[in-house]
Amino acid sequence: MTTDEITDLLTEAYISEHETIMNYQTNAIVLDGVHAEEVKTSLEEDVQEELDHARMLGERLKQLDESPPGSAAFEASQHSLQPPEDTTDVQSVIDGVLEAEDNAIELYRSLHEAAAEANDPVTEDVAVTILADEEAHHTEFRGFKKQFPQD
Image (cartoon, rainbow, N blue to C red; front, side, top):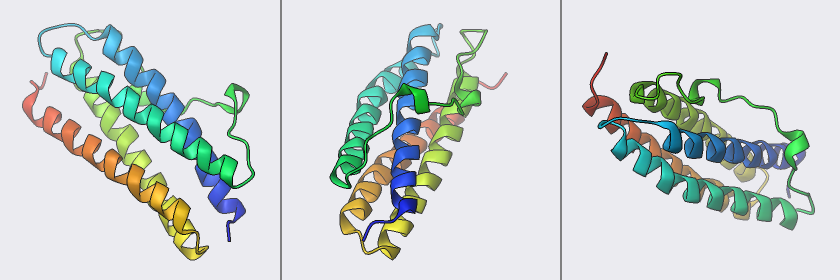
């Protein structure tokens, strides 16, 4: 049985994925410098994966007889992931990605827990699938943080 908590979490995650897509794409475009290329490539690859996540979440909402939200429901929250004024400040983007991934991991763990409590194995599966991807992104960017020069 699905609960309002599950549909609320699915909706929150759907919106968050779209915000992440926008921020990853923008940072992949604006970053400059020799140290930026690997991060830009990773962000560009992650855009498609985040879009796939949003599609999964939207489809799950539809299966639950809910409608995924449009842009009017959007309220920006990823302030640390905004493109830096200094387009060579790769470290600030890495830090922003790590914060966004931390938030996503927490959200998908909450979704998994709520789905388990509601005996909703399909939503549990969606949460676990996306959670695995988010943890992989976090690991990759934690590695970038270790290897990139600190100012």
